[in-house]
Length: 330
Ligand code: GLN
Image 1 (tube, rainbow, N blue to C red):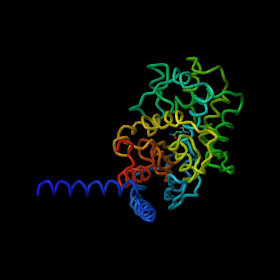
Image 2 (image 1 turned 180 degrees about the horizontal axis):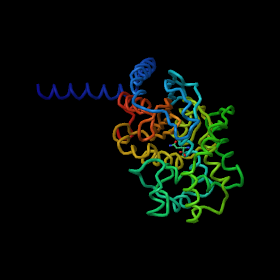
Image 3 (image 1 turned 120 degrees about the vertical axis):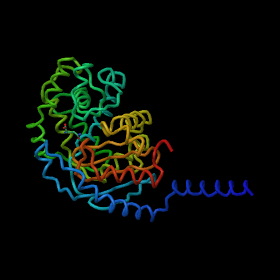
Image 4 (image 1 turned 180 degrees about the vertical axis):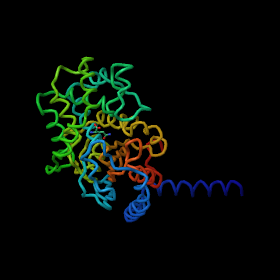
């Protein structure tokens, strides 16, 4: 009898587990709906970024989720066509290009693979180590973009071109007002750039190289674009429509692992425990998730928590991860 109860329990629990892995499609749309409704209460917990004045104009109530499944089918809910600036999410594309051109060893001899307990704009490691901690914090991202080969705005053009390719969306462009606002107020980023230049972290380059960083952050996307980029890294750099031009499992592995350790800044450790999805956030309000072998996910709401991550977006990722068993540690 006892054995019978045990085996019954085993059958039931494995059915529940496999049911989580093969979520019926119409209930996936329902899950997105209930998650979006619940996430609304988190908007009030956050605040729209205003340290870059132009960002403060974002509508706090815009909220959207986009998800692309393994077969490339897109699910959307809410304000998925609202445009916002990609901000720090652009750092994964810059890293991809810099590693393609220079190799991983070159890039990571100039910065670390460390996680962090510091904010995204911390300069501390530049003082203590003379090197950025990782390529996801501003210090590392500025050095990464400065390592991309080319003069003038070539590095930015390469990043824009790659984002347009991955999303198959040639309408993606710069938000000029945000760019000018970043450039005008970005003195903390500017000081990191000059410190790094002083340490010889990249070839002598002028301030146009820092401008490339400001420009890459000011590229406008929507939640669907983020889901497509998430899909790309979830599928060994295969595009959502199956295009394999940049197919590269090694690159996807690198980007996903760096996102997991540092993509959510000083929240990355807790996020790894609670969500377990390689993800990248930006102060424009976007979060991109790459669920290896499965989904690409993009969320948007510009109200940020104190660590610079979208509060509603965090809730959405945590909920979807739990409901769909998406943690890579499952
Ligand atoms: N452009 C922003 C900055 O440099 C990017 C920061 C972010 O998205 N966390 O401050």
